[in-house]
Image (tube, rainbow, N blue to C red; front, side):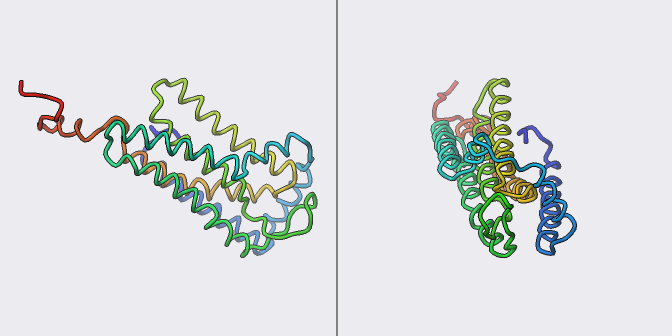
Length: 229
């Protein structure tokens, strides 16, 4: 979500994602009509090929997490070098969001106990999609952290588009390859969006370029870099 979005949009989006996630989870656990429609849709979409295999790998921890790690380090370095108040808050929020992915996903997989598609060996624990959640949180948090550091609108648009391509590519690959049912992926979109909302809030509370010296100067107190006039 663009950093210029109105504050009211974020709570509404989080609330919607929570409701959709609860609905999907209920249908999966109860084996409701939505779960049946999901399985029929998967039968139409699944067509394993090399491209879908490669795209699904974008959600691997070994691929997505290093991208986030670089963004965390860059955001922390830039904020600290600029003397920004609470420069550590956005990187900490991004790291915490990533840590929460397995903390939330693993118990949900065990509880829902959903079997996999016919395209994978017989097993359970496919709901929600851990690869989708990993991709969304890693690439999404990296985008939120780097967005304020980019000066040109073109660079910002490119960053957002790249994030969308990576997340949607991962999602497409997982469904097309048959690694996950479509609703496994949609549920992880909802879960990941809620986690990213926390990162978004942390970024908003730490405006780039607003340093301690700047705040002192603007409040009428001379900074250490300015002498008497």
